[in-house]
Image (cartoon, rainbow, N blue to C red; front, side, top):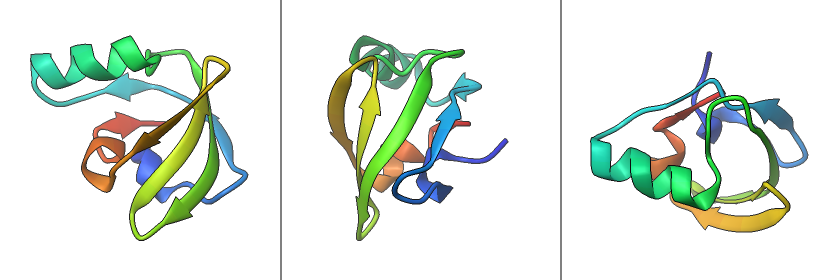
Length: 70
């Protein structure tokens, strides 16, 4: 397992675990980051990422991406 922030643009992987505090986990799950779901990195700039999850594009920062394990 590794954090989502380690993936490069164009990489696709399956979410294994979402970490962090309960509030943070709930927020990420509402965006579609759930264990077993697929995530594809669209772009990666200065730690900020645009990812495709559940047919939606979502922008997240490095701190959030580090809480999502793939």
